[in-house]
Length: 71
Image 1 (cartoon, rainbow, N blue to C red):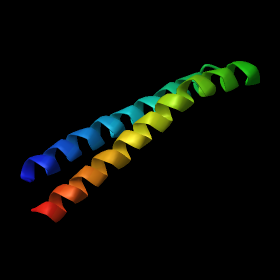
Image 2 (image 1 turned 120 degrees about the horizontal axis):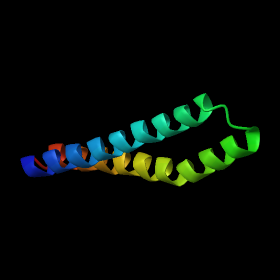
Image 3 (image 1 turned 180 degrees about the vertical axis):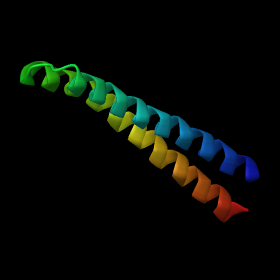
Image 4 (image 1 turned 45 degrees about the vertical axis):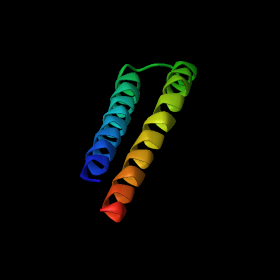
């Protein structure tokens, strides 16, 4: 079941990179000096990706816990 731990860690890292990417995109949008409406639109575009990345991180951690529990 060691493989399950590594797979979970990989999935969790992919989710973590997705979260960091979302932070960078919103940070760049804030620094660009956009109007409130443009900033709101930019954040709304990133929000589903942010939620998906968070979901991947949680699923990855669950897989790691299952791998530890089964070994």
